[in-house]
Image (cartoon, rainbow, N blue to C red; front, side, top):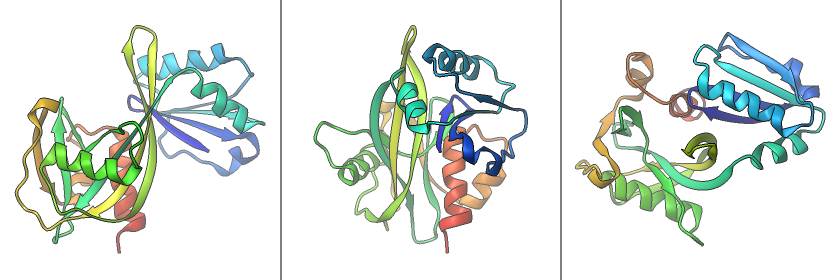
Length: 212
């Protein structure tokens, strides 16, 4: 199964035999079978980009590998890395950029290792140093347009990190206005905050499945 966020719509690609075991709790979902034509996929990508009423689109196929291959062929693939950084109080490091709360991440440089890129991006975007990586947290996918009809599928490798550094410095040249330590339970509970859904899901995964 692959989960991709297109704006705030969740697109799920899944093997047909696993469809009955998968239940969405988002409501207002659309379920369809892949007909084997890439133009068919583009119709649902367009719908996710334009239709804010559809929370979840589930596309299933008997050959999930083929579906995933066809889907990826419609995008330029960009790999990125970032971190969910915690301090001594178990508060999370969040940034505010272009009207949304986010977590520090960025594109990997050519030949760069994933963990090296994750630490570098966190340091550059927030000023946090002395970062210790506890382990891999998750891998996420989201899309965006960079030209007319040109789309990017960004694959981001996330790591769980720790630091004792208190002072932060948001990277202004990357349009980051704030870098703050936040109580993650309160962050998730505040539905008024503008947060990309893939970030909200990632924080929720840590709070409910990883945190001890």
